Every structure is written in C-alpha cells, then in structure tokens.
Figure 1 (cartoon, helix red, strand yellow):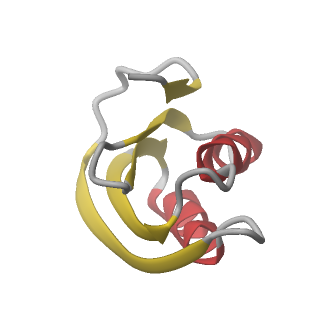
Figure 2 (figure 1 turned 90 degrees about the horizontal axis):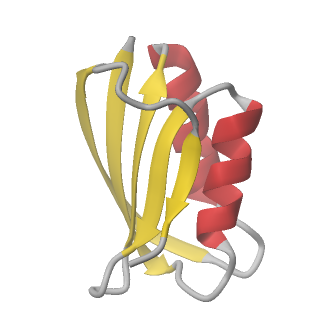
Length: 91
C-alpha cells in the first residue's frame, strides 16, 4: 500500500474540485482526505495500491469541467493504513 500527497493549483476552488476528488477516490476504493488551502490550492492525501493512486492522479489532472488545473505536486510515501474512508475536510 502506498500514500500519495497532492497539492493542486489553478482554478480549483469554487468549482466542486473537492467533491470530484472525493467521488473519484471512493469509486476507486481509496481512503484519505481532500481540503481547500488558504493559498487557493486543493490538497489531498490518498492511500491504496500504486496503480489505483495513479488513476486518481490522472483524473485530478482533468478535474471537473469548470476547473482549470495548472500544476500538481505529488509526494509518494508508504501507506500508513490510518484512514477508514475518504473525507472532505472543512477548515
């Protein structure tokens, strides 16, 4: 099991990007969370097998129709198993 940490920049807030990530991650059977950052980026942590995480990454590059993804920074780690579901975190 791997963990993928993403920071997505562009027009990604106010366009249902978090909901898109949550629904996509759940459909792939991934666990973790997604949230908006005050910098205007969207941050997510997801755990699962590496190939499935790569599918989520590809979907995040597309984003929902109203989004415009400019950049995604990705950090890979070993999974921790700490997540039970995929959540939207509201700050």
